[in-house]
Amino acid sequence: KVTAGLDRPGPVNLEKALRFGDRIGGHLVTGHVDGVGEVVKRRKNFLQVKLPPPLARYMATKGSVCIDGVSLTINRVQGLAFEVNLIPHTLKVTTLKRLAPGAKVNLEVDLAARYLERLQELSMEKPSPLQPAEEQQQHSEDIERAVYDGMQDLRVRKERLPE
Image (cartoon, rainbow, N blue to C red; front, side):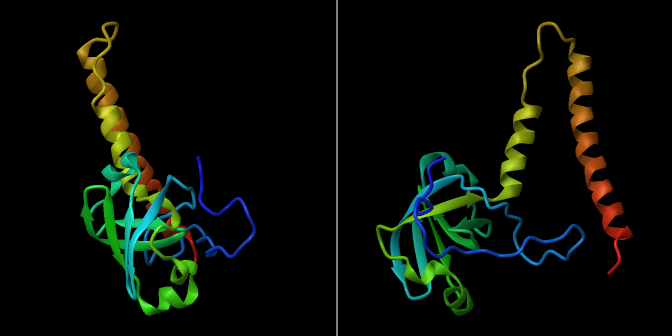
């Protein structure tokens, strides 16, 4: 993937990764760049960013997005643009205070949206002519069971971890 600004030395936004079992107090992010956007408008505590078309389907009001590694809540989505508010603390401790219209920014889409899209793709697969419909039903049930079992495993592991 093409990234913005990572081809030369300069400040970046970094935060320590959570350990398994740590309390989650925000959005789930991975640090992977999904695409590059462009700042359209910038006011003191407001930012509007134009998206590359393939990322638009992942944006939702009150959803999350990472801009240059900073996880933010989306306030509004309109076509290929979204808006976020920037609180004073975020402006103080990140590189976002430097952004101006025309700036290229690295974007990471909401992790849950990405997984939901993949699950939907799997559930929408058409039955193979070589596979009877009841086997397709079993395949869908297997996917649902795997997701449920995975969530249960996470809960059990978290319960076993010391506070």
